[in-house]
Length: 338
Image (cartoon, rainbow, N blue to C red; front, side, top):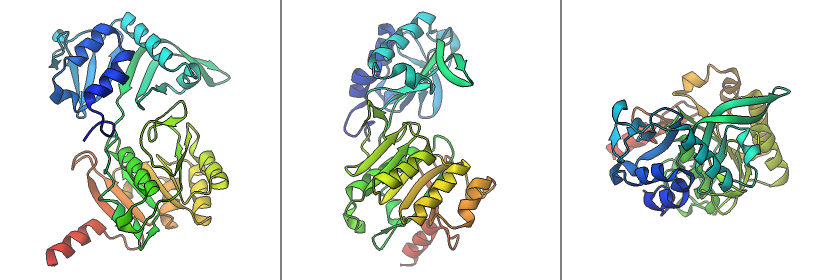
């Protein structure tokens, strides 16, 4: 599966990632063995520290020759000049609103890749005014897996009717990838499930789902999807509900009380909702008062639980909210009996 639809990792690096790095670092990364590049997730630059890569959820260092190592003595050490050059290149890529975006601690570049920054935070009236003296940055490579939702879709559609669903997942277990592909497929239409295509309203508060660059989604979120990028979830949900006539509203990482109130408005309006929440099980997220209220009132029809133990993006269970039954287990048993 490609990183961005049909794009190869070589094309993604050449056109979108390497241009924001100092030339010698870019050439070093370019020389990495392809088997590592295919699983490359993050590139981390910290001043006076080893150049770090996250590959298949594991941290490695990089030598001057482009070899992967865990030996600090062999690693290339990032200089302050390297950081400054990257900062300059990135700012040129985002002339649209670089300083404004940087207040969030990250910016999104062409291709939907996110660059996070650390440094000295300047406050004004308890609000972040700017980040200066950048000391480290982290480039997160956007990954779009077409078809990631294929196995989940049949469980959230009942006779052509879309069910409300909550995706429960620990960090880096694939919930954003799953949500993105659910949105794409439902927006475009799923013939085998009797869905012709629906209007989807997406509140992408952290710019991780559509990965908008200058307002344009860099990831494929479907032909009938309207995106509110960088908008707080609760406000965005209400804006979409009132103005865009959605059939479905999707958002990630709910948790605040205002999120719950907005979701209640959505369901009362007869609009479907798909959201995500950090957690490892239904029992764990029930301990949070805001989420517990949503669960107890049966606002969601399905709970889709992802697990790192089975591998990134693997489904541990799909629970029916009314009965608590694991629908995946039941279907497997039915197949065995048949």
